[in-house]
Length: 309
Image (cartoon, rainbow, N blue to C red; front, side):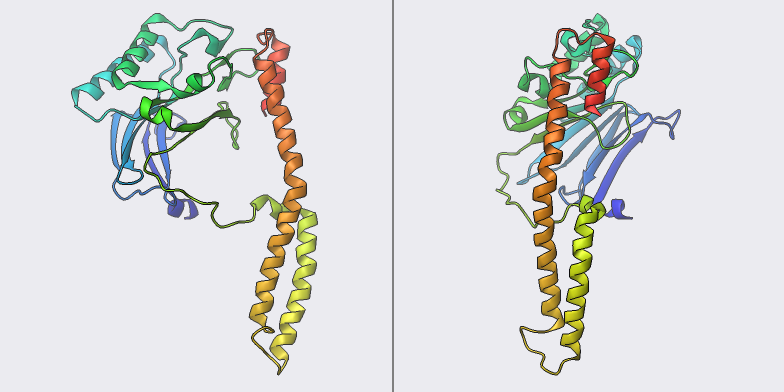
């Protein structure tokens, strides 16, 4: 129920294996996106899903989510079919094309370095040319190497998962990232922050306590002691005949909440820098390894996988 209230899902399962891992899904956060008037079209069942949704300032955005076949002949046919359907139906061109492409555009995006087969690559580039979208991560990180699919047990890695955007969106994009996911999967998370020219300035918003503090024993012990003290104060106020505007259970509760916030913020200042420093150290180690000349070595590749995890 919680996810149903917050998330809106549009999906197209694999028609032959609807409960299997194949298929495409677009997830929209109801708290951030207006989901009242979404137009969705399944171009290829289980493989290509197109949606148009409201964005900001009366603007809409069209997103194409794809999961391309792995086999060379099927991959080529997929791009040809997709291009034909997008052009023959006179549909609005997608502003964003994203997903698992199951091939790379450049040899540098694969270890060991190897060009993709000509036929599917030509078909993909034809589609990209017709839709006029660009590989944002590669343009932003022109000389870097990074991979979204590190094959376990060997040095093979590929940047199969990508996000293509129009030139207009590319000019107003931020934070093109490839990073490990928070759930068990064999692919990394690819993300980008896209902005619209007419979007209003948004402030920091209301502070909220990170959930990981609920498993921090040091923090919980402090809150438990504080809670006992404030509960005693509230009971005294409730039983007393001298209740005032400044001394009553409601004011005790208010001071308790404020104290919890202050304790949480102090704890985060001590705890978070250490965690961020360790994450930054491992990320830097991963980047150094995968951009090194000996990355194709099995042992070196395994070091990258460990650092990424």
